[in-house]
Length: 345
Image (cartoon, rainbow, N blue to C red):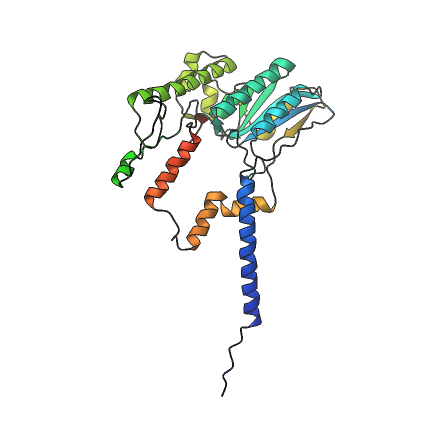
């Protein structure tokens, strides 16, 4: 007697088809995501209202030259957009002033200084005032930018200060590689050309060179705060040891002018202008939609790849030595250690 082959239920076929379709969709979108993530987002030119207004410019997230087009927030810092917006405000007669709305731990020395200089240019060319309001955090490079303003207000829960500079963490994996039988050799034109390399420890001379770079940026930071707050550099240095400050501590130290809630600060700033002057929000809004959702779910490119690898039981993960070599290779490609006005607590 001929035995009939077991028939796969229709519902099981539907589930299998959906799983296959989902896998194809994930594969396609992963390629799109990885390509788009390396693409600089387009900037949309700022356009103000045709009536008297104060431009409230939101500085959110880390201050850097790399825009985050996939942000968990509705607002992200975009350096080029911010600089171009301030240039537009300079030439706009309807604009009566700027209010920086800060929620940032700081960022790169270069971009923080560029932002400060652009704000100073705005004041010099227009004679209009700039005010600052600090939300949850406005530290290091965030305070650096605020030093260009005429008055600074903070929420009572604000963390600010962190006046200082970091060059980041320099790794030396030479001992690890040697213990695994890996040796390296770098050919340079001078003994300090490859300083900071993962492959060899810093010499005392190289440590002093890096420290001099940090000290130079730090001295500039202190002088800018002293100028902006009408303090002596000696007074600034008392609290400029990198420490984070509460709003009350910052007020006591002379680093801010008042502690107000957001609505109180907005009303206080608007009251400084003629009646009828509105507060107009200016901020860079990152991309949204399915790509943003896709990015947040996958946790970025590294998270995505790790998720895929873990799906195979981790069998494709690299060994310890290969992982360390990749880290060293990445550092070599970046070449310059990141020097930042950044609170890293």
